[in-house]
Length: 140
Image (cartoon, rainbow, N blue to C red; front, side):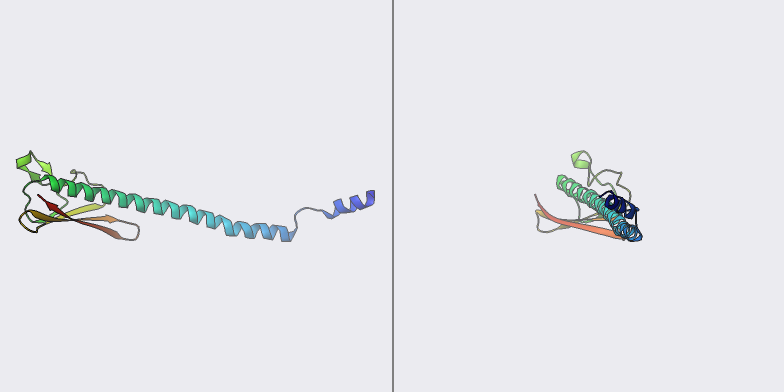
């Protein structure tokens, strides 16, 4: 009986070549997979954050145009425009735009009471420039 137990212990000599190759193969598959998943998650988070900032700039521009009583037709691109009648409201946002964002507000008069406002926000992305366009009709 003792001889059988000693034989089993002697045969169990540690890690064999097959065990080591299986472990290395598993590591070679899963480590790059996990790093790829983490980097993709970070990239998606950055894209979503940039799009949220662009959307907020566009909404701010539309709300500011709604407040101005007499706004002529035309295109306003990344500049601050004042309406003297209401004490100087900005057409959109503030003078400090986030880096890499350009905002273009286009106002077209529809009927006598309507204005069609198109806001185009362009921002830099990893691939290239992204463009977000919002269009609304303002009736006064």
